[in-house]
Structures are given as structure tokens and as C-alpha cells.
Image (cartoon, rainbow, N blue to C red; front, side, top):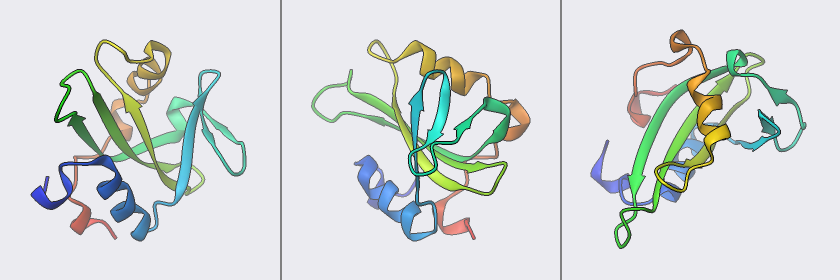
Length: 113
């Protein structure tokens, strides 16, 4: 992870948006939903390109993970979830249910095409 982007999620989100990862995914009713089309993706339809973990600078309990996502129908976007004591367990389970083979290595943003 490069230092210039490591402090705030928004820096990575903007960088990935500039690289074409513009779909906003929301978690709703056990699925990851494209906020524009409202299509509800199941875990086996999701491919994780990269992920970045964050801890709040002033509060270590303020933790999150930014997922960079491709879908089976070629949608590219991001999704930010909380983790730790305040995490949504159903949302965390969804990401655990994504098949292991659908996770790539945590590539650097500069390596994405």
C-alpha cells in the first residue's frame, strides 16, 4: 500500500474511480446491490480485485475495509464495510461466502488496467 493513499478511504475510492471502478455497491437483504441498476449480486457473482484495511487515527475501533470489485457482468466498483466490534455480521458473512478463487492478490492500484 502506498503511503500517499493509506490514510483515508476516500483517497483510494477516488483513485479507483479514476481507473473505471465507478459502480457504487450497497449491501441490502443479504446481497450486494448495484445502486444504479438495483441488480442484487450473490457471492459467487463477485470478484475481489483488491482490498484495503483502515483503522481510525483517533479511534482504533473505527475500522473499515474497502473492497474493489468486478462482477460476473463486468460492473466495476467499490464497497466500504466496517469491521471489528461494530461490524454488520450479515455483511461480513456475505464477503466470507465469496469463493476463494474469486479473490485476486491484493494488487497495487498502479498495476490495474
